[in-house]
Length: 383
Image 1 (cartoon, rainbow, N blue to C red):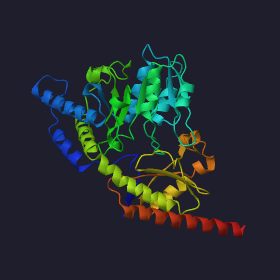
Image 2 (image 1 turned 90 degrees about the vertical axis):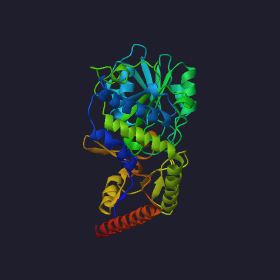
Image 3 (image 1 turned 45 degrees about the vertical axis):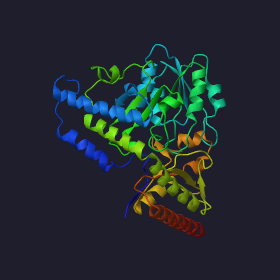
């Protein structure tokens, strides 16, 4: 039986979310911008979802700007800030998702970008943030929880530092929302990125929660939708699903976190019995569902393929750039040796996983390591 352990990449659509979407999809008549009753019904669906998403992260509905996903939300933040007249420099942590790093690289000379270093545990320290802030810095962005290692940042403290310098603060909470308590209001942030398909909602929906005073320019023009920050007819069905998923995530937060933490702890106990395995950021505060580890002497992509053949889906921590396999930029930033970083495997649990899945992974991984090690020994002996 196949085992899916890659929930940080995407989660399966929750049945209750599908049920919330189907009526919208079946009765997809009317443009939400139209004034007649068909349009008003579509608009009401969007506004209900806006309230549901806002409640998940303790924000005001008026602060929710729907997008096509977390990537678009991050692009809107970075490029929208770069297009404003008041932000001339921004500081991003060097372990951000590529949907933050690549837009930052793409803006060229429009805005200067500095990168905040993390320590060996993947954390942004207050000292590192203060050292990165310059006199003309206007915006700071640090992700709430890393998609690879699961490391959780102290966003409230970092945002307080930024506010003390009169700076805007953004956090990408795509991986954190629905797994830990997230509060736009209490953390004192000005912008926050969310993604529907990370919380058992549909792909193709996300949001940038943005303070109405935050200076942003739209990426898309041609309509007044979403506070004139995101022109175009809304994907009402996906937004409805996003709202339903957000409501479920808030209601089930504690139960979900408790369940996946048990699985994470069981996996880590098993991995501790394997001498070749090193768990990354093991002593840092991490998401309850995420474990990233390296297996010394092995290639992560090879391990991933071997596990996939055995019916187990996980993620590799390495990325292929221009045909050359290189270590993850996150592990590089944590000063993990390149050889170990290239062996990285990420396991991310979801609500459908069980202890039997953990046992199958541990058993299968152990068999693969032993088989490949024995093959290497035999090849060496025949040379």
